[in-house]
Length: 77
Image (cartoon, rainbow, N blue to C red):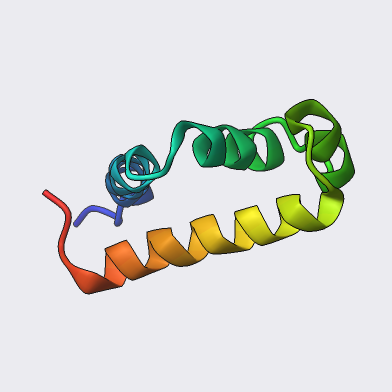
């Protein structure tokens, strides 16, 4: 008997995440990328994007909420 390979599930999750990210605006996608891939702080992102740290916080929260809604609302193909 074989063990469960988590690699398949992770690959599927990455594909789903990619489709969800594609539904965001270019700016929101870049902000999410800077926060979670580059591990930049909200203040650092705010400086790059040219908005306040509070606006970055709101943009991140709204983008994640949209992605969650999309994921819950329908199955992505």
